[in-house]
Structure formats: C-alpha cells, structure tokens
Length: 308
Image (cartoon, rainbow, N blue to C red; front, side, top):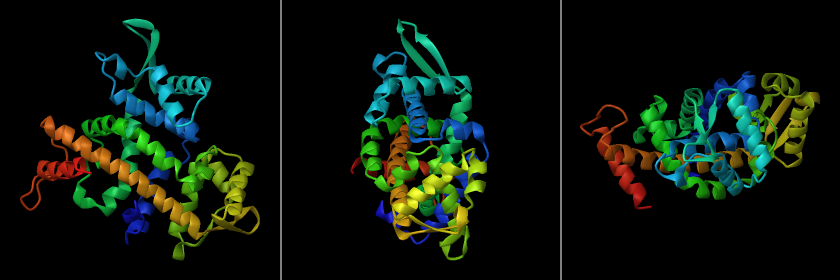
C-alpha cells in the first residue's frame, strides 16, 4: 500500500486513472445513476463477483437474491428492501435477469447480461491502470485488453478477498465523506482531475455549477459536499461558488493510501487468477520477452503470492 502511494511516478498513474474513470462515466447519466453512491457500487461489484462464482451444481455458490443480501450485510448495508430496489433498477436497464431456481422455485436466481459484463471489463481495465503503469513488469495485458477469461478469473478469485477488502476499505474513513454521498465519487474524481492538470497540482478551477451539470447533480449538493470537505480539512475553497479549490495534504495522502489498498487487493486477485488460468493451460499476457514466456512470469508471481 505504501509502495504505491510513495512511488515516484504515482501522480502520473493517478492522472491516467482519473482520465479513464471520467471517460467511462462523464456525462453518462445512465451509469452515474446506477453507481451514484456506495450501496449501488457495492451491489454492482458484488453481483459481478457472485455471478462469476455461480455453479448450478453447487447450491452454496448460487448467485441468488438472498446471497447478494448476505454479502451486502457484511459490508454494513443491512436494508433488504434497498437491495431489492437496486436489483429492480439493474433489471430495468438490462444489466441483470431474474428467474426462479429450477430445483427450488422459492429461490430467486440472478444472472448478469453481456451488457453488464462488458461494462465491468471496461471498469476493471480502469481499476488496474495504476498497477499497470507503475508495475508494467507484472504484465496486466489480459486486463488491459479486456480478455473475458482473465476478467472472469479475477472476479472468481475476488470472492475470497471480500472480508479483507471490507476490513481494509472501512479503515479509509477520510474517503467515506465522498463515498457515502450520492455522486461523491464523481465529485472527488473531478476535483483530482483539475488538480492533476494544474501547474503544481494545487489550486484548480472547480465551479460547483459546472460539476453539478456534468454529473446530473444539484449545485447545492456539490456545494454541500465541498463545504463538508473543507470543514474536515481536506480542501480549501477560494471564491464564491467554489470557483477554485486547493486539495490539502490530508486528502492527497488519504487518496493515495486508498488507491494503494485497492491496488494490493487487485494484484492478489490477479495473481490467483493467473495461477488458475495457467493450471487450465490458458495463458493470458503478452508475447515472450527476453526468452521468458508469460506463463513462467505468471507462475512465478502466483507462487510468490501463495507464500504470502
């Protein structure tokens, strides 16, 4: 985690991530509404993981409404009705199909559509940008190239990491100010976009009204998020309407640590997924370089991960 935050090329990698994230969601009201807050983000992410681990022959792995609610509860999201509403929303936009289990019609099974899986591959490619930029020797080409087999294997291996992920991410309390607000993640990325594009990365243009229009939020909501961030010591606002914002050291550090936590979990999932695919004689990655093939590199890294 610390290695990512302290890497000399971190800010360049952070900007690449920011640019890719905003290109994926910018002025896309459909996706913004679907993923506007932490509970919707969790439903989306947990759904992809549970879908990848579904085995029709093993009831305990079924991707069901009940199992999704259990996983949401582990992250502190304890309202079953809210989960039902989010499932209905995903179904309405063609991201998920709902059916009765053939052997027990009381159980509602979920299945993700190609549309949702395609979007998740795009999102995963964005999530791995920082690792791919700072650690190119680890060969994340399968993620970068949106390889469906690599994507599915990573999501399968992510299931075992959920408890650790919940523990580590819950410790990043500073970022909860943004993650717990509707559209807060979009506001945060827009803020870093401006800072990382400005000379010195300090004070940057940030008009509340422009940000609100960009992400389908109200101006008062954006203003409230930023005023709370200023009160918490994350930013300093300059001028009426937040015409310029300065990110303070605390938020720079918290954001970097948060990305370091995410990078560590993603790398472990990638290592385990690579080992799974090599065992199946499926070798994702780039062509051999300097006489070392991709399978050897992946296998060596997977062995190292297993020893951790």
